[in-house]
Length: 183
Image (tube, rainbow, N blue to C red; front, side, top):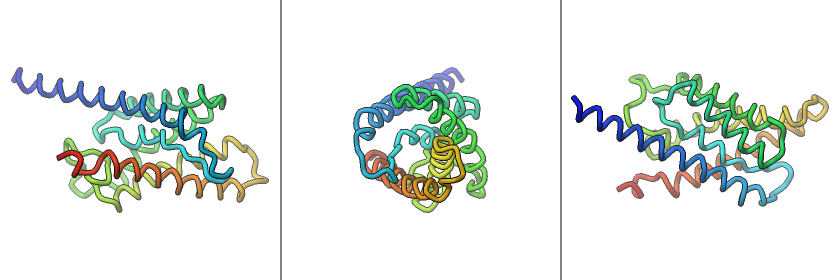
């Protein structure tokens, strides 16, 4: 019994360390590199939200909400955006539970499986991450503009930025989370 508890504790410690490192690396990527890439005013890449997308299925809802809020506050600090990213990330963290529940496989999620393309498949990941990216971008850009007079202009920004961000998240998944790299 003690051996199982130690194994569970070690696995939990490993998951926490892995997610903390991912949190720090994605914030650094966003702030040091991606922020300086200017494609157009319509395409804004925000791969830092991958922190929320990649959280384990078993993660507690409050932990997801707190992590999402903390992530948004960190990005707001560097972007000087007065809570916009914190609000959008918190909404995304809140929505994550319902998106996972809606697209859940019939038998539920297996223990130890991660929300990655290699573990869950491209179609599942497209529905999961695509929905969360749209929720984040929609709330972020509409809170930023905060008026209906530019509704369609902002909607175009949301769609193009969501496609760009999802493409970058997929590229990161392909480079770092493929099954071939794990073996």
